[in-house]
Length: 178
Image (cartoon, rainbow, N blue to C red; front, side, top):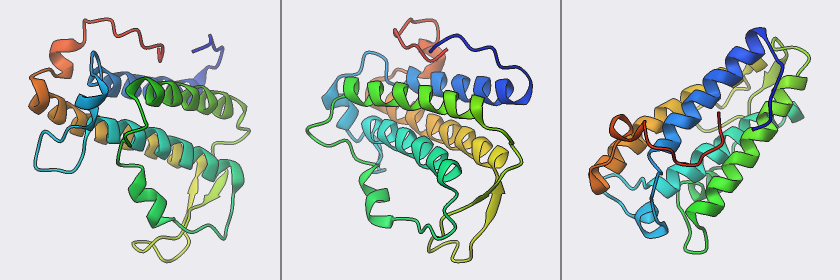
């Protein structure tokens, strides 16, 4: 990531998001593509699928703030695809995409004029009435989503090969999210 000079609330939000990404990414250290596609629990979730999901989720919510589309509807078909790492996808490629999305998020938040901006959320089967959140709440939701799935990833990784974030924190993974 590039050096930034933000301060205050935007800096705090971006710092917390960077910390949550870093914790999530620990679960992917030294993981090959086959391992990333492997189910290690009764859940359908895999580490590759979770990586794809947190990337897509972050991008989706930033696009939601950017477009302010008060007619948007949640696309269930494409939403389910984001949980699966396809055979033509690699961990390296998904990590590269996540890093690019993180950089785009940081630039967007740095330039966002007002965190109180009211953002229309896409309607969905579980939320058929349009809701409006502040841009701040959307950003906090991205942090919550990343943290939530970091916990899933930790369990999956530990079930896969015994590694977990506690035991791997001191290991340099070459990630550039901080």
